[in-house]
Image (tube, rainbow, N blue to C red; front, top):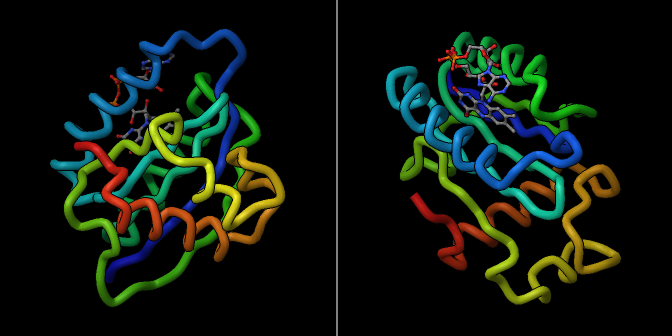
Length: 139
Ligand code: FAD
């Protein structure tokens, strides 16, 4: 059975840009083996990640991620059983918001900044879907 899980978190202060690179590299390798797909969006210290895959492995991964010392304030935004994946093309796609027109963020929030803490899970999911449609995801 497939599930999709989405959460938001804050990067620890002063985390070097290399941290994101390390996380993506490890994620792609691990997720490939575990059959997990998804996207990781990072902007100004905020992570927004969607994970899809078997219920057991997605739950285990989320529990592991939640204790990772490289971020904090981990908040579950959405968890659902799904019949098909939304992000089948990425073992962990990266969305770099700094390369995008701010109108995409403004469409879904009060300010042109990524703040999933202030909007509903369905709004954050709509934002991720739009970013995928806009081909903003890199492998
Ligand atoms: P190893 O890489 O061998 O790590 C062993 C332990 O060391 C783990 O507890 C790990 O948390 C810790 N660790 C490793 N590197 C560092 C470091 N630079 N600083 C501090 N502690 C460190 N993992 C995935 O597999 N898939 C994902 O999609 C995924 N997404 C993530 C998203 C975010 C925002 C963050 C912060 C982490 C993410 N991770 C992801 C990493 C995850 O939290 C674990 O670090 C990783 O899964 C552990 O992989 P491993 O079992 O191969 O152990």
